[in-house]
Image 1: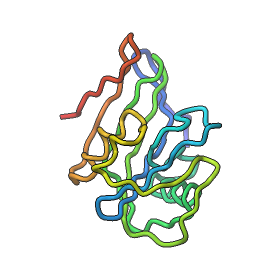
Image 2 (image 1 turned 60 degrees about the vertical axis):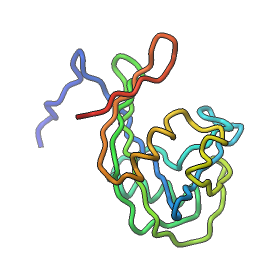
Image 3 (image 1 turned 180 degrees about the vertical axis):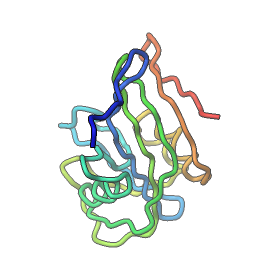
Image 4 (image 1 turned 180 degrees about the horizontal axis):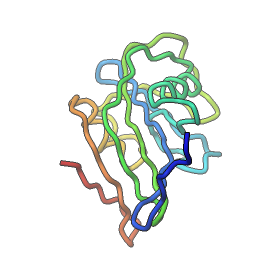
Length: 163
């Protein structure tokens, strides 16, 4: 195969591929309270997830991350949406949002944080990562979604919805 002709050009950026996994049991979602030692989101509730490693497809990576962080196998994992996150002018994150509810195994917390089933109506009573209340209703609605996250000069999250 010849050398890849794809190039990172001005106004394009490279992305880090990540997963966010939301596991449901009725109206409860499995969240992880970030360990105090985490670089990002320490003490905040978030879904499971992590990087997509070389050689993995999105679903395989999400299944691996779910098992590593919760001890659970997810048998019906699906992709619900994609979020492009602007981090720096030439770097971003492409986050694949996945969900499932057909689980097996024994749930156990990991070094990443403690696990808790949280009723969706109680999300406001937990210190959550700022986009969780944006993403969970979209996943529960069931339609595929596409979002872009930017950050204003004040550091506040700006969400743009794809059309």
